[in-house]
Each structure stands twice: as structure tokens, then as C-alpha cells.
Length: 218
Image (tube, one colour):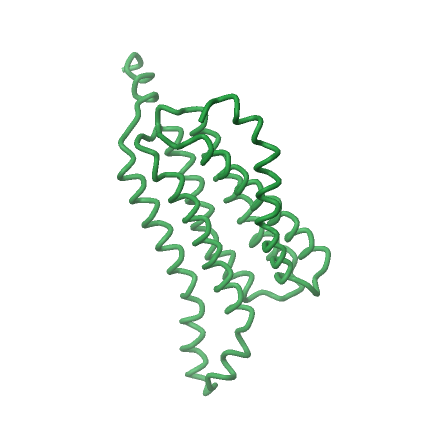
């Protein structure tokens, strides 16, 4: 039994089923985002509220829903582009994917917290924006793991380099957004407008890490 364990641990598997599983998990997470709003519509109807009153009373929930939907979509698109060239997965890569999916599945919970808790609740902001930082960092770890294991994929080095710049830029901007949101409660989640600086920061990171990738070929 023990003699066969190293071979089992180092075994690679076809990537099709893990890819499909990740897509399903992301789809479910995006769907779960709408559930608190669906429940609030029923409650508003029972209490006699009209549509305008419901919209005004749930502005924070609507904002966090739209923001989280877009962010999960961004993470999924980045993941989809990366794994388009992945043909095999190892046990370690499967565990990294599981950790990444955990951060995605958590986001609907963090979204619900951010949309319903008091605007002065700094911990809600930490849980919400902090979860995005974790997802971006896990995406970075997966990308670096694939770079060190070229037998699993046919991804061009330039694509890995550009994706690494994207992950670093996202983690950095989410971190700055969290810092602003915690230090300036009046700004709150509007601090995430800093994400519009994604393009310039991504280009800067791409230049900074270009040399590290250039020695491995293209």
C-alpha cells in the first residue's frame, strides 16, 4: 500500500471534469447573490411597500449584489482564459482549485453581510473586500504553480506573464480599497472605484515582472 502512494500522489488527471466542476460552482455562487434580494421583495410585498420604497430601502444590497456579480464574473473570465490551455491537473492543483472555489463560494455570504449590516461595521468591509483579495492571491498562486509545471498545460509564457500582472494588480487595488474603506467610513464601499486604475497598474506590473519570465522562453 505505502509503495503505491507516491505514484498516486504524483498522478495527473484529465482537466475536463475539474473545469466543468469549477464552472458549475461559479455559476451557483453568482446565482446565490440574488437570494437575499428575492427574500426582501417578498417581505416588502407583505408589509405593503411599493417598488420605489423597496429600491430606496435596499440600495446597499443592490450595490453589493451588482458589484459582487461583476467581480465574480471577472474572476471567472480570468480563470477561464487560463485554463483554456490546461489539459492535465495534479492533486496539488486540485487542492489549489478547491481553495479558490472556497473563496468564490464565500463571496455571496460576504455580500449579504455587507449589504445588510450597519455602514459603520468595519468588519463587514474586511470580510467583503478581504475575500476578494484572497481570491486574487489564490489565482496568482495557481498561475505560478502552472508556470512551474509546464507538463500540465500549453499556455504561452506571455499569457502567464500578463495574467500574473492582472492578479497582482487586482490584489493590490483590492487591498488599497479595503484600507480606504476602513479608514474612511464615509466613503465605505465606494472606495472600490479605485479598481478603474486596473489598466495602468496592470501595465506597470507587466513591465516589472517581464524580466523574471523572459528567461524561461515563450
